[in-house]
Image 1 (cartoon, one colour):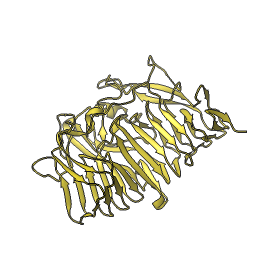
Image 2: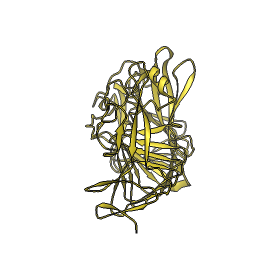
Image 3: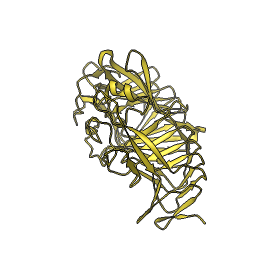
Length: 425
């Protein structure tokens, strides 16, 4: 049993200077050098590390134009949490894993703790395009959070941040913290109703998937990144736009009720997955929107036959493997269907929009309000270098069974029975 006392910092450094500065960057991109950590801390099996002060697993980050806020070369420390070992982040503690934390053990972020890891921005299109399109679409579709690999529990009252670094031409490196999970509406995932609400986050190093398991009562809200793109500081926000969920993100509603509130629009890009497990519920309030590029669900207004991430020709996925501790084999591309799988219950209230491919598990249930929308049009970035252009996707909600699919209709309730969706009697 080990303790980091209040006022004390336990540092896993990335260089001989033993710097505790977690905002150091390099404006020349270098992919992670696998198995080249400067230092390593191992918490062996059956041991517990309780942090009352600070735990820093440090690294230098890239701050470049296309792939930014990722670990730079071999400039990182790493921490291994062995199976059966636990790191407990007590109230008032700070844990920054800028380098990598991995292993089969567990991290528990308690009420009042603060957790930080890099916001890997994997297809940042630069300040010019981002400034041009920010009022119409959220300018970042591809991102990850690859530093905290081990299973981490974020309990009610803890705050989980993603740290972004971006080099903006004449203004230099911009740094900002994105509140990803907390108790307020200013976080992407809002934990509600006290101690029974929590999330798990972990990374599958084989395929690079970042997994989020939602438990208790949780609500989706907007993502926002505040940086200086021009002479003034601006906030890139999904408010009034769709929140993109890229193909490496897998969300599971494991228990309780998760809500998409009025005014929030979630968009599952190709390869992304959202699962509602048995006994859990996803509620879509009136004014909420859920889009997904499911199998056979989308058509386009241009020459495109599949979704794409802008007009720069960078591809999807773009440069993910250089952001991970171990190079993964990514399991999606622009033609991989987004998957929404229902083993529990999906309620789409009247006034909501459900435009996605919905798969089922026996016992799954979908309830569609009488005036719910079951299709919608989404504006997408298609901008070339220095320019501004868009394409439009029309997405139709479909129920996908083992051997067939059918359009969703408003005012109906569907149950998944013996491999197929059926109207409730």
